[in-house]
Image (cartoon, rainbow, N blue to C red; front, side, top):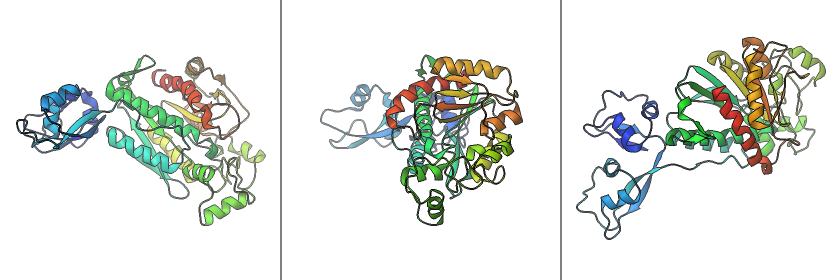
Length: 395
């Protein structure tokens, strides 16, 4: 929601009158100097939208404000030309509406178009979110990173490294909406004050690492050479429900130089619907973008969300730091998932992260059954993963 600065207004006053943390207002307006607002300048107020109200017989501004439990001055801010002594029946009044409900839902088939639409809605309502395009998919779809918070500790989450594990993106986005609601409304989630993390942690999120593959699974092959090649790899079948790879048949979570040669020797040696690690490490733009992101951000910890198995992999070649065990024990406690230290699988993003930086990295396998997991599991998976999201902030 936008307001126009009046003489004497300050960001502190907006924080007070709208009951939104000052830091969130400052971060929503990076080009605005908090010390020197100019009359007529636009200021964004996070967590609010604007509704239209039609004046009825007997209405007064004071009555409208009282009925909505808002300050009357917020009405003057949004209606600078209003004459409170000369309201006209049918006149439109702009009224601030505090958003206290989810504006998006992850519980649906979650393709790239859905993600893009939901991201734009969140950016509009919560302009303190910082976004960066970290790269592009094979087909040129943008790979976006969101950042929330101002802390020195960078904590990373990502989803949909594998195409038919798209429900991980849906779960992440569902939680992000709840997280943002708790920030702007100064609420708790499971008893934890979310705003208390804002100055301690910077949350880095890449919701969908493989958008081309996700769209292939959910929407079928695209027109043109990429779709034709995917059909060839899939032996002519238009059932792509088992497809894990990116659009050109490379498994993005087998692309990292952490015993990549071991995986290459025992996995398919040509593009496939799953498991082909590429002809060498880091050939795919999606995998390269994620590697560069880890180097640029220097994550304090990393969580890569996959499906399925209700387990958490947390070790690599005895290179993980001792505190990784403490963290995964908490993840297990709050989710019921089983921690597994080592597994005979390499070349993953988590493996490479631990190998290079010796910091805690986790592959979280959500849900149970066969991929792609059905949406009938969504609510259960969300409740199980909620504790992991929260614990990653405080552990």
